[in-house]
Image 1: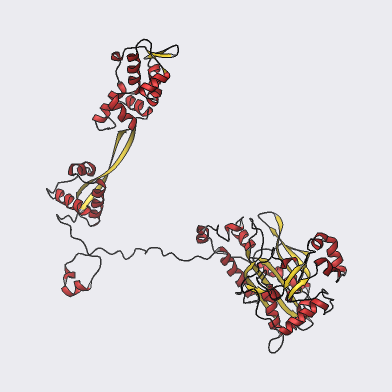
Image 2: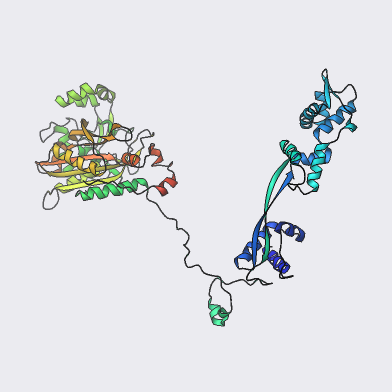
Length: 543
């Protein structure tokens, strides 16, 4: 169809050098062609210089469906007046009038009849006040005039047009068309230009005479779509760079499934701890148990739990791979000391709430609840490596899983940033200094430390930072020194101390990118446009 339009256009313009198409719309109607196809042909011919075109805008009025009905049957007021005159002096009730002319006609026509004083009320009836032959249907006459003159803007007075527009009988439409004349490269027949130089052209020599399309060597290619780094990954990359600058090495944390032994037991966390219940931890159904752990190390951990060591009396319970344990309250009564008394006085509900029988499986597989499970394995390898212990700094940034209720600030999975230093004779001062150095590098300079309780660190501290947007202190991490009961079974020298701290990756990311709902950062509700447009993460610090 487009090629047929091109032939018609070039043929028409070829009748004389001065030939032109004043309006493609009217020309298309005269040639019985689709105007849209004609416009497409004009633009295609213009690209190759066969024609030149100028846009033409034509404004005119069109009639609404109601106006078309008035042209055919008369205005509503004339029809209502005709019905009342036909009814005689008794007139018609409103229901009868509606039944005779229709509800819509009655609604519009009755109002105009009363306004023009063509009708009046006589009790409950409506009667004609004038004869039908004494009035003229001015609305129908104006519409006929408008339609007869093609709806041009100057076909009638502005007052009449305003009256018709007020009744929404007409609307102004602007039609775009084109005037067309010969172009610089006009020819009566279009010859398609080649886009590529082919082998056949070279063989035949036709490339010397075939016209080619112009090449724009300065144009840019289409933008290539690709992957984008998630804001969490951007912050993670910055954290990795900072920790490596501080001399830390990254731990291998790509194994999300761990055994209960490495996740809990090796950390000197009792087998009756509430965190080991299904309402806090995701356990693996298949395979349900780990294959093995270092047996000599397992026995030392078991001994530490049952009878203690390194200055501790242990938990005084039967450490088992699987079986039944006494309730928490009974177990804790067996290892009373001043720390337990303080814990009991502060948290009596915790003790009594968990006085139930728990099934324990030391080798049971689970989704790790913290990356400290990897830290314990790295420390065990460090203690038993060839050549003996050497001081090290380790860090990890990876995903952990906890069976929590999801809300604006909590998910069942999140990313944990963990750092640890293993060296001789470390103190709490070393821990505080290391933490302050790290947080200053990520832009948090105001820190406070609060004593806390962790099963595998003593002393332990919560880390608070001042939030400049919220104008308040907020918890940003946890820290402590690993207990001797955890380190001694590994085989580390007696004077080796391990300091550690951890925080989530999501919280600083939310602060950095001004995100107030964690589900908008991570999960199925993430806006992909935010991922594409998130700026590069950078923490400026001179530390």
